[in-house]
Structures are given as C-alpha cells and as structure tokens.
Image 1 (cartoon, helix red, strand yellow):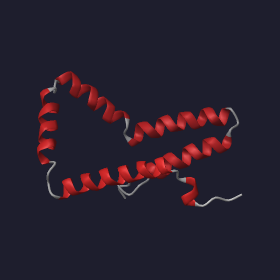
Image 2 (cartoon, one colour):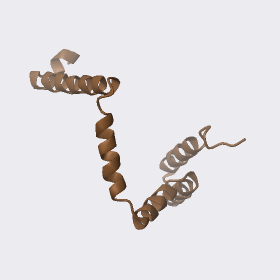
Image 3 (cartoon, helix red, strand yellow):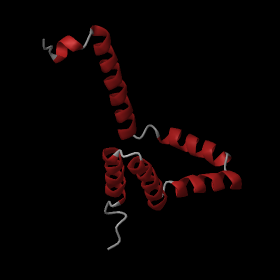
Image 4 (cartoon, one colour):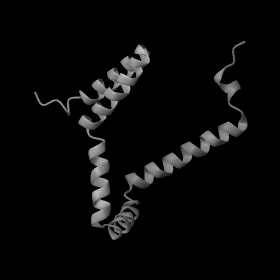
Length: 110
C-alpha cells in the first residue's frame, strides 16, 4: 500500500514545516539586511571577556586533537580492533572514510 507525500504529512506537521521555513526566511532577510551585526559584536565581546591562558591551552589541545594526523592514527587503531574481531567490512568503511576525508585537496601538498 503506497501513500503519497501529502498523505504522510498531517496538519500539525504542515504547521511545523511552515513555521520552520518562516523562521528561516526571517533569519535570511535579517542577515541580508545586515541586521545581525550588533548581535555578532555582543557575542564577540562576551567571548573575549572569558579569555584566559588556561582556556586557550584547552582549546589549542582540542584543535590539535582534531588534526588529520591524530584522527588518522585513531581510526587506524579502531580499524585494527575491527580487523582483530574479523569485522572486515566495518574496518574497510572506517579506513575509506578517514583516508577520503584526510586526502582532500587542502591536505595534499604535492
């Protein structure tokens, strides 16, 4: 038994979709008319008020932990665990994902 798209969406869902699109359009117009710059500056001042050397150290460590070398090493270890469990498909998916992500043109320096 097949149902069409209109039959799947109940009136409550249509209201939700309409509200979401309406809010999206309001936000897009506010950005286009540069009405959000004051809000951006307020957040910038709020964030800079909380700067400290210990927080900077923490965020530098978080940035380093997401580097391609570290993620590649972590995924290689995870793939090795899957290989040892003889789950070769999962290991191949992990390796393919990390290699294709880290081999993007921004990381290749040929």
